[in-house]
Image 1 (cartoon, rainbow, N blue to C red):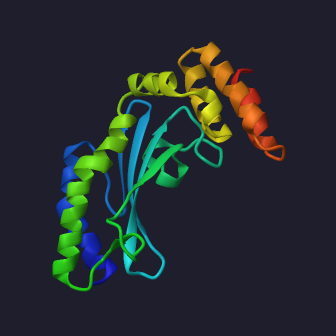
Image 2: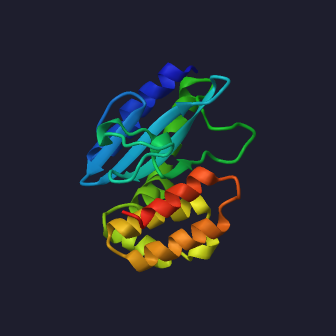
Length: 196
């Protein structure tokens, strides 16, 4: 089974479900935009041409994209989102969601993807489901000393945007304390959060 046939099955079976939930677009990337909140669903071909990855991304329009710079919400790619995950295929020897060797296998895999959307797929977007509520909860539940410095930067920017300077300060301090010595641009970005 080839990629084109598999993608056609996704378009016929999964995309209507995504579109019913507010995603828009065609091709390999669909987006759902509500105010500053951007959700991205992306199908990425795996090397070898026999499978794909299903990437999930959530972003806030006021945050710079990963790698820096602002990106228009309708152009946001999953790789530019600050919150990312993947819908994982069932365990096995293959990496990614296999296209299958027959139409029946491809249909079975797409049906399984549909069942996974209801659980892990939706759960990811539910965690990042509304602004500001979901992100206020995320900030309350995060222990600054237990997260990566880059995550601290993202959360500090969100806290500052919400006007929670005390939490932003705690996240900046934790990020600066855990950032590697050579991460000079990350440290500079952390220091800028409270300078604005």
